[in-house]
Image (tube, one colour):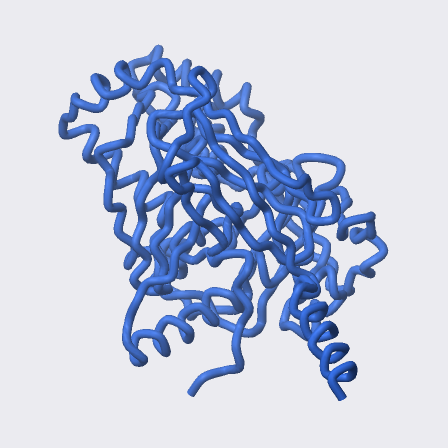
Length: 406
């Protein structure tokens, strides 16, 4: 009897010591590169997730990750951040991060001390183009705008924004506090598009049951039809089942629109004659400038479904998109927000339609991960609805939609 009991206890101890399937422990330390002194309260987190922690007084940290490939972000005020790729299939026993102090920290403090009315105007443009103008984007609060360095080039209409420490954002619609390590933001005002890149960490806000239910409903709304939803669905080859219609979109130059050289020459000629425009008769300058308002391209849509084999390929750690030209993606599960409709058709009212986006690649291929992440996001360009949605509509990559709530 005693022998049997000993065997059972031994088996119980063995089972308790086994790691949970699919969970991996990442351990490490963070020290100052110059002095090797440990740094406390350093933020260590997985890019675009709720997985994160801080170092203790010895500079040590521990994280638990599910299977997969990740970017580990090490961020500390006054130091250069570190972005470290992690593969849970080949984890080192421990990782030592040596962070470097920023050399221009004092200079940036001096620059940030200057504020004028133009800076505050540009701040509003930044918030609209970064947080977004959607229902959820408007409920986001930028808690530390004073850290921003904003520059605007009036000749090129280029707005650039930098920050030497993470942005602190509170998303009251989705229930997240976001620590966003912004590495670059550019708004091309003349062309009307924005490009930004960063490494966000999501922290769940605390609230009662009523708030939690509202946040979950809003998260489901934000998820359905999103880029993350699309990337997950395309890898599972479930686009139609998830409500997405993907079709080829063709764009050809508009033969009725003058060339850019002709338009520039007409504007120069108009300026030379002091802006006088001929009314009636045949004025070539007036004709060119009138036709300059025509769209640059003519679009045509192939209504036939596109086979997955035409754009989706498998690779060792996930999948990749590889195609030429343009895809139109329509999500039939939700209609457009009223704010988007108004912005797209200010002078001609229309009813909201299904959310429609255009997708094309800036490189030969882009890698996709099963959690919905695009490995090189700047190599994918979005127009339409996806181009309109911004940080205020984004979710962490470890988000999984629950069953529909009443």
